[in-house]
Image (cartoon, rainbow, N blue to C red; front, side):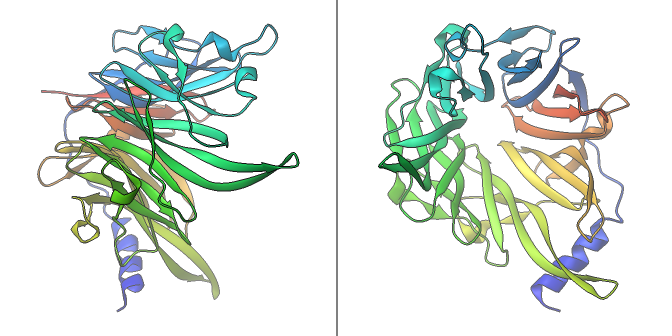
Amino acid sequence: MNVKQLFTTLAVLSLSVMAHAQTAYQAIDLTPSGGTAAANGIFAGQAAGSLTSAGSSHAALFSQDGTTLDLHPSFLNTATVVGRSTLLAQAEGYQVGSGTGTATNNRLAALCWTGTAESASVLFVPFDHYGAQANAVGGGQIVGQAQSITTKREVISYGPQHALLWDAASGAVTDLHPGGNGTVALGVGGGKQVGYEIKSEASAVVWSGSARSMVSLHPAPYDASVASATDGLSQVGYAGVDVQIYVEKRGRRVRFNYAMLWSGTATSFQTLDSSSFRDTYATGVSGSVICGTGAIGIPTGTITSRHAIAWTGASHTLTDLHRLLPAGFASSTATGVDAQGNISGTATLPTGERHAIVWVPVP
């Protein structure tokens, strides 16, 4: 049996295992009445994300007591047009994300806040670019990416994406892109930055503050990989393997994705428990708690639902967080975890309405 046949067998068998060992969590809906919201990250129990009302998305902080703080920068608005903004992460008094509006030429801009709407500032990008985004913050560092461009005779040509590292206090920027087709930085912590480089497929990498420090995390048996988050010691993400599946004598190529845990090198990879899920993705890590999302579907590749999940403890025991939500939600994702084990995420109703959620560990 070759590697890809083995992955196919494991994927099919995993769909038949429906029982999970459950870690105790309580789900709290953070969404104000009448709104739709998403939680993209969390720090000290407070979630960072966006709140949409009247068709406009505003960066927002959500507290477990039900209060919401609107951080949408006024400079993105005009008298007739309201801009859009979102938070993707927060830590240690900083919030980061992106925004767009007339002031940014309707291009996505990487933004940083320090707790108020008025504190929002555009992070500097050291080259001509079409758009930028800040994805994560931690340990006084911010990471993200920008789409490079060149302009000649008013014609824009797109270059590679560049992973970027900003100092949160000073705004000083370091270009993490070492050359090639492109890089994206998605997570930061403990002086390490993680993301992926673009080859023929995405390939997971970790940096230590400079372009020259980039180290591949890509596990050799897989076709693609992404590192999504780090706490400085561990890196998490996912890797995918492409399998040719035949249904009624017709071939179809399907990618199976598996949540991954690394400790700084490609050979250190561990595949996290997937149990009953068609695909799994790890999106956040803090010590012994890893969060992510599991996709439910049939082996031929059709995804029917997504569940927020967590792996906890030294054995990385899997918990289906979606099962702890109030009845009625069709799908959910987990997006981040803080030092206390609180997990942020988003749950979606069958109507498409999104709710910001925090899962709180129960002693």
